[in-house]
Image: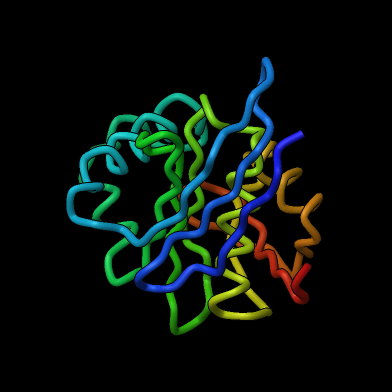
Length: 170
């Protein structure tokens, strides 16, 4: 079993947590602030996941520049495993709104998404909110299992979405 070695994230320190890995061993996840050198890897992840896993999006108009538009003015936190970008979360801080939460397919089901959300709770408290496409059933299941509640629904460029909130911390 992996020993947990968590530290509170600050501007000068990262949050480390060891997680069990498939096939044994431990995977150390590091959360840290976005740096300009992260741009290309995050933009590629954002583009690739949307292209391969979001059939409800308009694939003809997807571009790597979508990452810049989607995260403009937001605080971005990067999850790293052994120096590789494993995922990221972006928050529109004035509203405590999680705008993006992406985890690379290779690192899913290892607790990275939950760790990113725990970081957001530690920084902003609750409630937090987000929108999730109704067609994104895997993400909806993930959020519901983490205590997120549906507050409403709407329709946008990518079809029907649910407005979700997390009202209390772990």
